[in-house]
Each structure stands twice: as structure tokens, then as C-alpha cells.
Length: 224
Image (cartoon, rainbow, N blue to C red; front, side, top):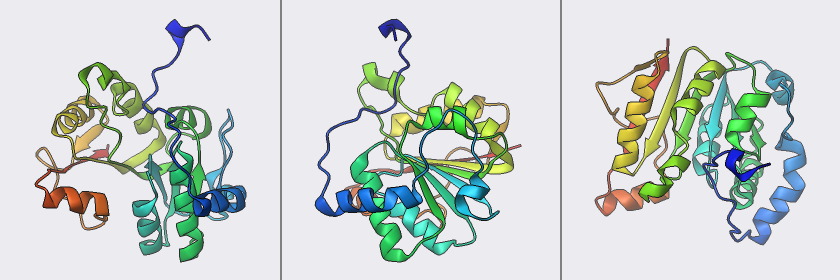
């Protein structure tokens, strides 16, 4: 592919350290709980073995929040998308420890997954918690929350579904609020930023940041 036409990625595949436990979980459990990327729509009810509300988790990091939500809400199915192997291995390890059956993982670029694998009006909710802020101004074009992604995400959401984004970078929060406010199919559930809802677990990273005086901004919109 010509470099001029190469898509801008919202992530970099850094060579992060994969622990032995993460590597074992990745090797042993991804065949069971993973869904390989494919360039055509998939049947998520078949992948989960049932028909249930579907919640999308984009960029789940080390899987702490996804595992907690899945354990607290066994009535929902959670599809997690993440590119980094340490995080995928970590979530798979948590799935095994908690005996979860309602989580599936796609280790691939979220934009391509949404574009190629997901049918319209699939998800009842979507969570994007603490996406990479790309703090340097010259890297802002790499930020995940951009109008094309939000438009694509809207197409994959059911009417009435919620899209919840959280960040601890104020300028990114302002961008997220502006981008989502400009999408005509979305309505803000709050006057601007929303209070952190009880259903969003507070991660160790977030707790540490709050103690240091860092802010956290939640943006929650509903598809009309």
C-alpha cells in the first residue's frame, strides 16, 4: 500500500512485555474466547452461543473493567477489541479465574472490525474507557474518537443504545464532547460531561490519578 494512502492508526503495536502467565492464557484460551478477524459480517449470537444484549468494549487495556462488568452483568455479552497481546492475555486470564462465559475478544484494529465484521444495529451499548490520548498536538490525528469512527459506531448501535467514553485528558474530553455533539444521530445524556455512573468500575490507575488531583471526564450519548 502506498504510504500516502495508508490509514492513520489510533494505536502503535509497541513491543510491551508479555508475562509468562499472560502468554500461557493467550495461547490456551484465545482459541476458545477469541474471534479471528475476517472481512465479512459474523453472527455474534452464534459466537456467544445465545441471544443476549451485546456490549462493545473498544481498547480494554488490561481487561480489568471488562472482566468486572461481565462478572456483574451475566445477562449481557461483552465483545472486547484490543490490539495489544499483554492486555488480551491479561483479560483471558481473568476470564478463566472468574469463570466468565459472556466475553469474546477480537485482537485486531477496532475500525476494521466495526467496518467489516459487525452488522448494523448490533450493539446495545459501547464503552471506550481511557483511549490513548496522543497528547502531542502533532499526534492528535491518531486519536480514536474522530467523526468517521463515531459515524461508523452509530451505524452499529441499536436505537436507544448508549456510547460511553471516559478520559483523564481534559483537551481530549473537549474533543470527544465536540465530535459526539456534532453527530446528528446522538443525543447527550447530560448538559455536557456526565457524572461517573455507578456501573463504570473505577480502575486502580484512575483511583491513583484522582488522589493526585487528576480529573476524569465521562461523556455519555444515546443513539436516537
